[in-house]
Length: 474
Image 1 (cartoon, helix red, strand yellow):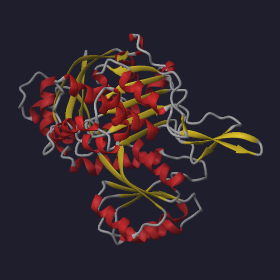
Image 2: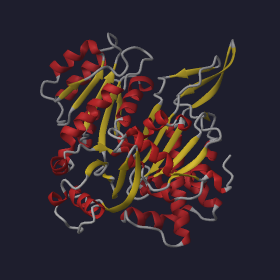
Image 3: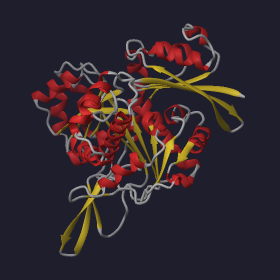
Image 4: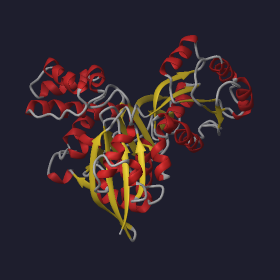
């Protein structure tokens, strides 16, 4: 039996698993983890790898070379930080954000139309890993693109700039930004309504491999093991994409991944139900979609989660017999100690409510909605965003949801979203809830490029059906 090792370097923990590969199947042999060493990511990686290879914890990395096939990913140090610049917010800017997130990035800021002097200063302050420029169909609007190119040329930005806008002015953009590193790729929206994300995703991944890895301190791993890393969210995205290819019964699924710093929401389902009474506003979103929320997390982002999520958190606390003041001390404690695990029953309730809030707000931002509009021809529904009503399976992943054996943490917030304002959220109708029982999705995602069927097979086999536990989940 061949042994394959996959390691994911997260913001809080570095997680690894050893798999046995026999015939066409993967078998989980063992798992281990260690705190991520932010000052030098290689240290935590080495500790995990040594454990999986049954070597001493501090074995030098070079002595572990050649003992197994190695795959790895990373979202440490904030992950892949991307700034998006587009034209119309409902079209090209929305598409730029989708492209960035599907490539495994986190959009730290987005800008529409013409950049102001303040916008440029904000970009410089944020110092993103990549700036993504989109806008204008091929042969269409070019005014804002050329204006923004001139402003970025005179900025102090030092990161690569990916241009994925109007092809007719691509050469002009290159000529204007001679002192910047500009990478031109195909237009994200060459024609109105035509979505073209894949070329942008590929360019972002190339930049991650060639340049950003060096900045993350991972070049030593690449050199020793001849293994190219992936952004962790891209690894999970590819796993979610490939599962229905081999297992059609798992078409129409969603995955919610709560981490210490972010909450990721993935869906694999057609984005719009074609009917005479539904009018889609904005772009038709891709079948496989990822959104990431940098203000929603259970440790690093706990304070921002508490500040922005007080409506939901306060409501749930009252239902449990508490108030917002009761949870403040707990939020302060976990924000300062990312490895903190609740011990008291009260703390466990608080942690669960915070996790529910992550699900609630991540779903709110990921899932589309519609409003009733009356026309001379009768009532129609105007849809904005993605329709998830056909989703049959919702899978919880990440440290918290992988360990949570109740449907409540996912089910309660989704139920509450059904009564969200005037807009009807297009939520899964009657999903079956699962958990990524062994917390394998990120490490299995690393294997998809070489072992797609095997990774998909073990992913399906390793989820646990929570809806069979007799809880109300309608």
